[in-house]
Image (tube, rainbow, N blue to C red; front, side, top):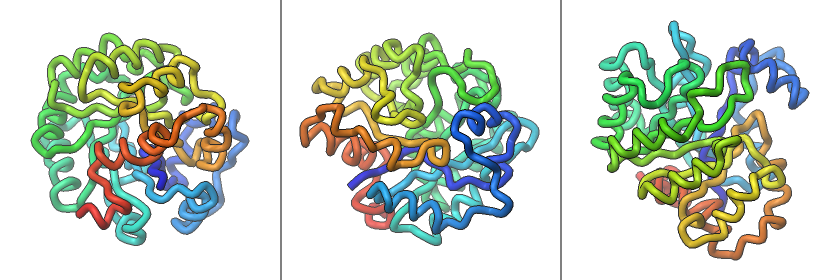
Length: 279
């Protein structure tokens, strides 16, 4: 079984946003003329034998909702055997954001919160995040975020693991933090934080197996690292079959491979064989 911890079923407004121009240039992808059917995302998962995907909602400043929580709810309801949801919130309205997170987790069954700091140009230590961290702890769900440089045309400063993730983990030791995109070019900092903090994890979204930094591969081969790294794609930017194509070259033993592809994510997000089985 494989769980993809960072993917999107993309709306046209998500794919067409100007900040993703650099990614469209790199990948050769074009904005589709019509909305992509959910079945198309399921098909690319099937091609790579990815069983479950955590679908991210996306919201940025000024009411810029690229993928709404309610859209994610519809997709999860359509295929509860294949998908679970990660919520988005409006950082500019902290109390509304907490209420929305509670709605998504308690009423809708979402498995966590994802905030992409570069969308807001607000580092994770900004005061507007802190009520959400407390709510995540109370609700027992992870806070998921992005670390490292930005591929989209936005500043990269908010993606520095040190000092930002380090400080949040110190302030909220009970908070589970899942850091996507491996932290490059600060990957060693990200690994140091995963070693230092019991509840800090790394996901490999936005990187194929062939492009994973060597220091992260070495970490995966350690006893600590095998329990700290999760598989992700950032689909549609990278398709799962492409992300997994060179997995054998990483030299992972059977236990580490199982942890990386499935068990770590199942434990952290409360997923069983399928999302419906864990409810």
